[in-house]
Length: 281
Image (cartoon, rainbow, N blue to C red; front, top):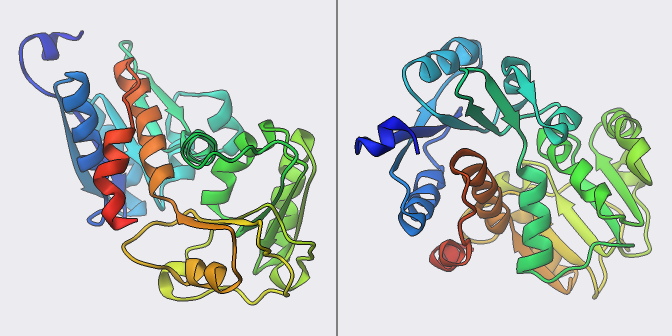
């Protein structure tokens, strides 16, 4: 326990992104803190890309103990910190920064473990030997590829609007398992076991045009984005009669729990938070 906590002052944490006003992170970490008896405060910091490095360092020198990092700063955060965990180094993207006692900054990426925990523990999906189609090749996908491949999946296909980006990302992670990249129009069946949407297009009411035969009655479709109500992706998946269709609320909560554990040394129970957020799923 630090001197600040012992003295009764809440230790400071927060989220840096642009924008951040939509974030549920203060609510989630507030529930974690209350349940585990941790005296913390969690705030939102809207920081533009040009100010990210200067403002983030200022926050730590002003007394913050840890930060979550969201779009569009995850790759910039990987360049800012003094040390990366192996999974963050592999992703070259950071969503969690912890301040060490010696004032050095540790960068971690809990997105992948957040996703796989939600899929395996909350949804009961065994990922081993599964064929997975991932839509998108941006930072959201980069952050989860390593963890997915560690689950000994049969194959991952990354489909992207710009095929070259999907091919490059597949080549970068190819040493971890069977993975390939292609354009949206070039994705081929038979139906996949799991389809992950890692694009932002769904929240804008768009779904990439793709060939038929990718989704079947045994397919789980998972939108890594989250918001109230249906997204274009979940509507598309339901129209194709996927076995189960869900959004990334569980991933959000589980990655937050991993961040909280890194900062506070205690892993919170995520079930009460998931239940509280269930009306928004």
